[in-house]
Image 1 (spheres, rainbow, N blue to C red):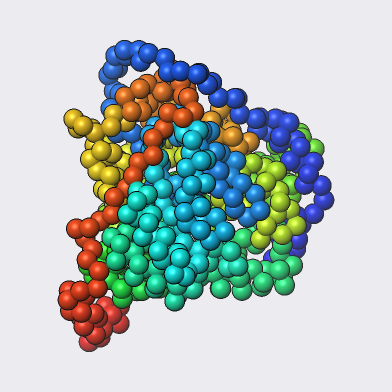
Image 2: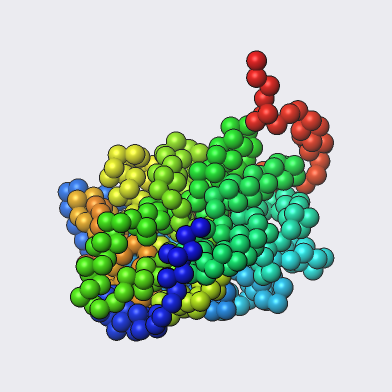
Length: 508
Ligand code: URP
Ligand code: ZN
Ligand code: ZN
């Protein structure tokens, strides 16, 4: 109904705006990474009072060098991992996208991309279609290639999305292989309908993105995926939980004993869409823009483009609820969904929000943001912090205690985080290749001062000492002890499903 506001966002010379941004008037281009051909001998360093030694972070959800929406994410395995190390993350798990439908080709392609790695990494595999070959290849991935998790997209109609029939096939296959099924939970058909509606209303600017895919569509898909995983009796991992609607479904399922894991991401925990519509923000922005002789519309258009990810950054309230979900155990670990684009890529959607590449950064910011938002604020303990940013991820993906622990025999991935020191996030100082940062200007307490990756000091005194090719592929073994194919236990389990679903409990 707000066609007037909406229409004004995407007119005139957005390219000029981009040029100004790129020229560094607003956000300057990040300094190039300090790359040294070999590792410096690790210097001794002494601990200062107040510094906490903490396990290196593991980011369960990233997209480095991914071909997506007609472009490629701006961070490759070197720049993305360098950024991660500067922010205290020492391992990540990236999503392999099949090549022409082939999982093996996708896997080989990603191993190639990861040749430039400077820290340890593992892979999940996306399943975007279904046939006998895919089914066989899933087996090869699990038995020979070190992949134990598969992501199914219920959104991105026309490209990555699969239907319920294929989802069920995928769940069954995961179960039989002892692999973990993951879903991107948004109802893609309904999103498609929402997008059509926006276009009919004349809302083609970036604000149309979130309007076309409200929380109810995330709640529906989360519920459906959970019910279907329950029907197959296989564990389920919900990626990028962005709304209360989705979290409530996870809470219900866990309460009833179903094995469901919920992963919120840094952006969803700390950002909301209020700044984009807040009159105070617009007043401040107007003053700032007057000096740059830019119209407010350019500014808003640009900012909203940067925020475009799926599921979308939600209204105020969702992020706080997700934080509470983490502190109370409804949600188990924090990822980032690091899927960075620069401003020129975001501008592909200048006339049509459906073409804005979906994704925001986070791989460098996650450890800082979670510390400041959750530990510094008193919501969780340091032990909880380590669990939510590292240990739980290692356990869920079956690489504990090689990762996720400081023990004899474990990889020496360690950080020193100074709780008394402050951080400030900016595209002018971050290590991602993007010229923008969705957390621009955010400050907080708790700074990662040293990162040790595989026993080597790679980040110290604000300097990265990383070399491409030093990272290792971490194979993730299947969960043989949790799964057992379709057996007698399943027959019993299925018969137990005759009981009414809890939420329709009779009332007196
Ligand atoms: O907007 C997002 N989340 N982009 C990355 C792809 C995905 O769905 O995880
Ligand atoms: Zn997704
Ligand atoms: Zn993702």
